[in-house]
Length: 178
Image 1 (tube, rainbow, N blue to C red):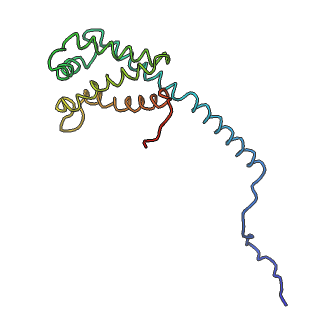
Image 2: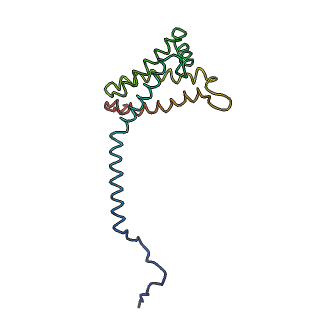
Image 3: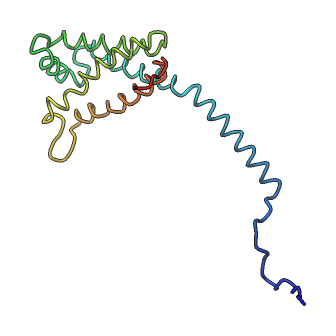
């Protein structure tokens, strides 16, 4: 003979508690908002990054057209000197850098010539990052990166941004490596 005992005072039944209907509605709305935000980001974030990257390159490229304005003039001159074995330097180095950066930036902003802009950026990044190899003494002190070093190192973020933009712009079919 089994006896059913009454629940003990103060004890709750074991198992999941029902969720109030008002919370279910809120969770559904939050899920819908999250889904809409995700769709928006998928559609616009890479384009926004492409335009922002273009604006940065136009801004820094234009500075190099104006003698005495860019804080990296001496570094640009020295880098071109090393990369071209002394053939290109001085004002010509600044003008070439200004042209490459400005045209790449405008191509990215337009979106129409984004592939061309990415090719120019790839060329520019060789020159932009090579001071890390050629002139580490100028970029780093015993306590860390100099102001010039910080200026050069921030370009690592620009390289990453360019890779993200390239992943969208270069939309050809992905082939397996067989």
